[in-house]
Length: 221
Image (cartoon, rainbow, N blue to C red; front, side, top):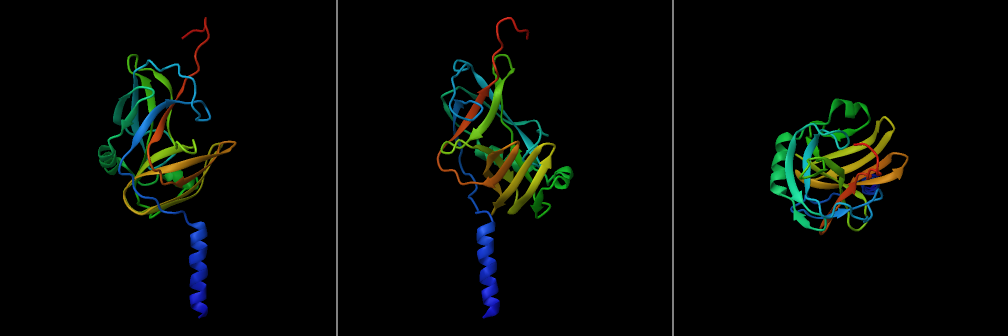
């Protein structure tokens, strides 16, 4: 009886502390929208601009700089919805994902099992005519307006721990039950601190573009 009681306590503790599982993504529809620095709808200075969205991978980490070339390129316009090629993204993720980078482990991230491979899809936006960067791109939850990371995992795994890189601190609480693409919510806590957890998204998301500040008359290029 005492043993059963201890098991029940352990199960209840895990239910309170362990993240909920979410389902792998089967389709992605995204509305292209101009946003401000708080990810709220903003005035558009690029509504008549053809936009190229490039998706390189950040393999072996969720934060950091891309370490692959572009794996998917989309031509879009503000106010138009697009369907991302989930099959291609999943297959490319399976090919290019990698285990956690050693420096990321030293910075506090724990991945179980340690050889699980994963990769985040970056989102970079350019003027299609000039090939110049026109702003900052990100996926956004339409309901909460929080930032989303699109991440591929090659097997069931858990990512936890407090990642510290420079002034950045990011608490990870992610669990996935199968290989595939998943949405990871990035909640801002202020002072360059974040919380990351997997989240179930129903319906479409926002592909947000925060335009670069416009130069004032007389400023150089």
